[in-house]
Length: 395
Picture 1 (cartoon, rainbow, N blue to C red):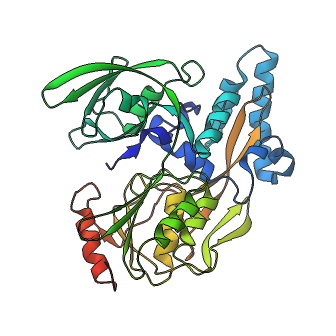
Picture 2: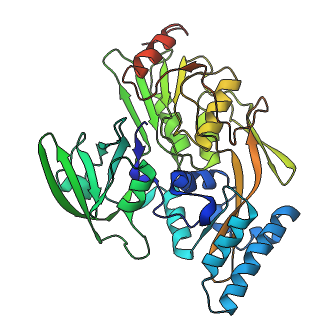
Picture 3: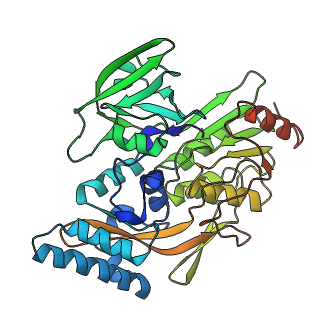
């Protein structure tokens, strides 16, 4: 499993039995990436209901009715809404308290509460720290890349999905906000110790660019939060003309669709990026004109490549713009619309699905790479370099 940024995940999923923590990473961006493109997500709750298509309106009414009845009986409207969403069979439907939804908005704006760690689960099930953000609580505590994370607040994390570890690490945002302490059990070589750090308000760094010793440029994108699309375009523009690029989307949990479309515009000269439907109403997303259509490009993906990242991958693959390398992607390609419920909570309900330019559905199937390699293998980048050398001029 490739590295997955801990600070890009939601703290908790209010989802009923229909969805487990294994899908937690989707809900920061997967559900968000399903938000209707071209709209301001912050304005949608409270307005989406009046403009919602008939099918979505009926589903929303069922969930809202359950919340209202629970409030009248003195019970939790959020829990009642969760049960209604679960009964509906909506795999990606979710219910957030007002505070949780504000946290989701913050995450999409590139802000989060956490300790500043990135990590991955190794094949033996152990959790390894892959990055420590400069100036973060983790950095101040002396935690380093390569350290093993063995426990969080006394709970062993070996063998658990990274998304579950994230949920424990970040805690409950309403009871454990910035400033609260979290106890980490760590290991470095033969040394084992416990470090207590305090969660803090941090900002994400979702786009990183590095040039390897052989001149290969790798643009790593971990999520499509606000502004990322333009960051990708600027990063690619700085690479020498004709030089190849590896667009590393491994572990990318998705994000705002509009940002993925902007990123696609770095490599496409206009044209179709994806189509989507909202209760049968067909719509399309197009790249901006002026992208670099000749630069050799490899997209590196894995099972953690989700949602908006899959939309971008599918567009580059269908348009013949990139060779896709790695393993099959996650398979989240549905559209959610948020609506305000009684009591201030918000329901995200599925209203449609995305398709690639050639008409392929992504939801439940993912994107199959052109060349399958183990994306966790350190040799994956070397394989990408070999592929790029066969595509034309490169550094």
